[in-house]
Length: 291
Image (cartoon, rainbow, N blue to C red; front, side, top):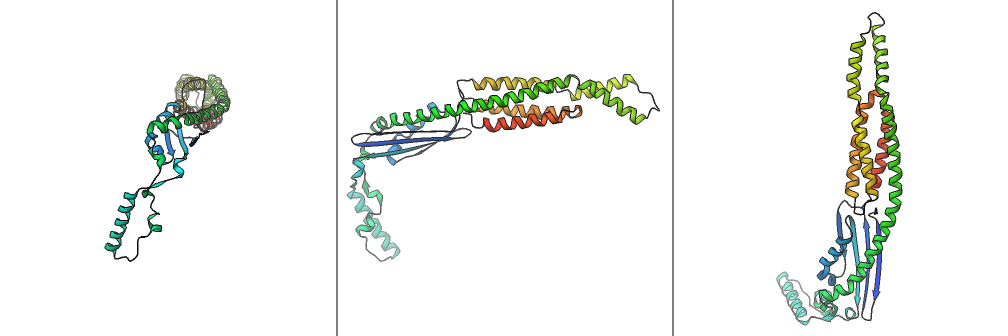
């Protein structure tokens, strides 16, 4: 199933002594970029958070917001040793800089490093046991939204591929009579230039037509375009992330369309090739959101 890279998931659990809330947001990104915005308590399990996100997502800029509150966090204690050391350092600083003033309680309490949250005593395993189910549930919501967006995106991409396929078929059908049309144009041009004073050498004309037709032949490009369209349709039904592959196929389509335009300009395919490139560009814009 095709998945979008845009999504949102949220989960929250409240116990007797702890409240955990997790929000996960994701937007387009070429690779997987996980950003974690959480209290310092989460630092000890940051690697586990990343591994869990990476186990379910392949691409996108993912931001994980974590709120962690416990009863212990509401009653911080003072690290007396840290407070004494802070006062000593501040007094030394005043003497060294010859700055007058006393170090009082209002100044000391501005430094958060003298406070200890008893909740910080919780070990990594304890933190993870509370966080993991909430994070997993939030990621589940994110995946559900990405799959729902992916279903809509799949319909749009199918329509674009159908439009591209139709233009390619028209170009292929036109190529069948391109050589004869080129012969008629060359004959008319030569006849106009010679003004009937010199007879036209049919053998030489046939040779020139053959050379021009070979230069203008875009059959190989049509074959490759159809192959890319077929592979793109396979991407729509793939079970694994296909965004990078899909984007590569679209780039190849655009390259083949450009080559077709340069080859077929002499046989009158400029207009349909422009339409083809427009449709491929629209497809490319939408593919940027595929995981």
